[in-house]
Image (cartoon, rainbow, N blue to C red; front, top):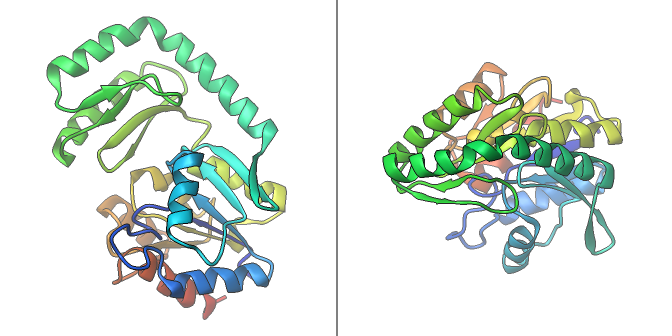
Length: 256
């Protein structure tokens, strides 16, 4: 089958919390049909493992992804009824992030104090980033993003990852795009056989022709995402979330 690998963001792209069901059956049936024909489906998300699995369980899915990209960087693969880490990738990812964040350590107290003083939002540290932000509005998130990106320009390999009003730091070698390329490499799938669907800033690294030939964004995709998909001759749906992704998959099926 021409389409061998499908990578979908989760929140806003296939999952709409207040819809019933939150992942439309049309999309679930399509993904199941692709899997039965040998394609691999990956959920590529900013969520961590427990958050994603809990939400999938509550959604009462009829299909399950074959692999997960979590926190925009860690890879897990499905074996039987469990998701197990891709050890070599995840270990390198953890090592490189620890080294990067260690170099940043002397700057962090001053950076955190500046953020609290000059910007609105919730600022905290978690297991994945020494600075995390939940901004109260998109405008506030824009301002914080600009400040963090200005700081990141002075730190080799530091990137700023944003989804809606959520922002954190990461190593620039690990994102949704590089993780998807690693999965494709192991499966021996080329970009010509790969679909990627997303709706927000953190999806942009996988919404590139060098990563996936077939790109989809639902109607709720933010303008930079729609621009990237349009430039790559991808599919911009008139339907939101999972309904839009289902239409995109059907559209490409007619053309491959």
